[in-house]
Amino acid sequence: MTLVVIMSVVAITGRLAVKASAAFEKVMIVYKIYPQDRSAFQFKGSVFIKLTRRLRAASGAGIALLVSPWLMAGNALVIQSDFGGLAMTGVAYGVSSELEIFNLNPLIPLYDIEEASNSLQYTAATWPPGTVFVSVVDPGVGTERKSVVLKTKSGHYFVSPDNGSLSGPAEKFGIEAVREIDESVNRRKGTDWSHTFHGRDVYSFTGARLAAGVITYEDVGPLQEPKVISLEKPGATLQDGIFSGTITGGTGRLGNIAFNIERHLFAEIDPVYGEPFTVVVRNKGREIWRGNLPYVRTFGDVRLGKELLFVNSSGFLSTAINQGHFASAHGIGAGRDWHVEIRRVEQ
Image 1 (cartoon, rainbow, N blue to C red):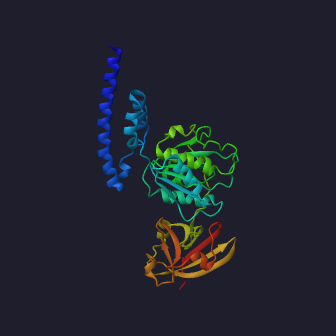
Image 2 (cartoon, helix red, strand yellow):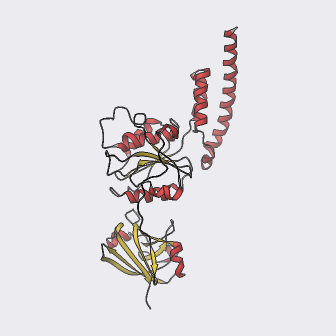
């Protein structure tokens, strides 16, 4: 009698699993045909992972395997570093060959934690909730700084050393939770002896497991206070018609120079497209470049090879050369030692 009951339960469970898998298959057809709508199908959540585990326990691995390819569909994994991330990409594919992995290029300047923070803040704004970002700009690798996964209120995940790299996304999207990575679980086997490549052995491995649905966010490690190390960002000012700020970007492939002068601050003087502005760039107090640039809407508003002043796609005042490299042409860098003054051209 007992055997008959057990066989009946297994048979019913099997039929339910088959029906469930058919339903998931229909949904996944939509998922594959309309990739722009993928954010609507978040199957890697803990509820579905638990369901797969229970199916496996209740009715055998065969039924669970039938359903799990859909249940465990993962999110994108985005990797940025200051050294190139092919080894980290390899680790991620080792976790799951089905992962969609993207490496951010160009590379972050060496040891530039502030640029890592800015890049995460800018890039994540265009990616759907659930995306996992791995950021490895880690001059303090092997020291006491914490290895964490930040979950923002926007639903994004950021895997990184807590060294200031997470300052930007935390400020922009808000902190939902912070967990320290438990390396006894979330570290590649056989790498305990290595202390100088946590990007490969810890961050990429953990990020891939999270993106693929191998682990839930709760499996990352112990919950921490909802805060990360924040970088002090000097603010821009407007006084007597003169904008003062710092250079926050310009080392990328395009060479456009970005300032921390936000568009709303610039709008306080009611600028008019076409009018000229004097731009002065200094490094540690020494004048590096000075010029008069037209304030325009976009690059094509000036002739090829000509310089311009414009508001970039992040909403900050910037300079560029139409199809040229402003930073290289004038020997300009970025960071706290680089300052700018901008004013209307004196008539």
